[in-house]
Length: 321
Image 1 (cartoon, one colour):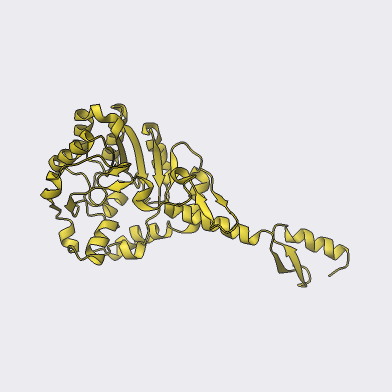
Image 2 (cartoon, rainbow, N blue to C red):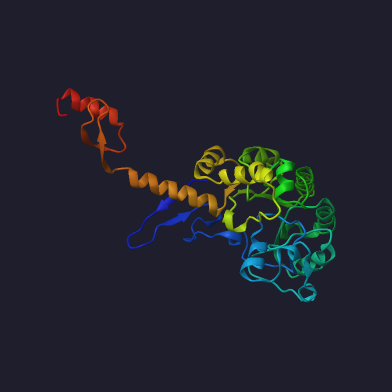
């Protein structure tokens, strides 16, 4: 995927990439993936420490406490509600996960959506017992379903710290393989990536993808990450390394390594870094800036795109300094 910045007279700069190309606006968050979202419970037993939905429910809307979040409450009225045809793809779920505890309610709502002709994006840190049931009993809806499994790392120690009650890497990969072998559309979300070794996660998954491998940062790190009950040792081992891995240098290295590879797509958090980098390069290029000669310290003006030493040597030879 290539980054391009387009300019037009009297127009704002527009940044196109991936699914947004040609639309004129950079979409962010879940809007990159789906037209609308659907959920039927408050809370999620996976207890992910970086969960954006928990942070919003607890801190922004005061719908529950941190402790209550990991004891989810199902809204049966939403489960029983009739479902009609919606425009575009429906991301289901988006603020909680599909787990053995809510599987029966999930299948009820999913069937209504599919019977109405909707296209559904199932986003999950997948449980084998849940995904195999969907694959086995909803084969007639293959064309309407896409799985997007969240796999932020291959390291189970890292996964168990950041996503305490979610499945390990082997179970998630097995779900991806099973859905792929059963003929469903498959994709992976490495958002947030939980270590800088995304290339290894990509390599492990790419043989079982039909659509995309999304890569994104952990946005709003200080605001979203729940550090309650974390020891100093865990902060040093897990928190500080992940925060450091969100830096622009790591992102740019990751981009250079993976951009253009099959299935790779970049989330808005990565695109913002690369957009900022492109602007910085554009700002430097063509500018004239004062520099010092390394030999005599004299000031001169040098085009930022030309190696300065060449200018210095030429000017010294011509006795212009």
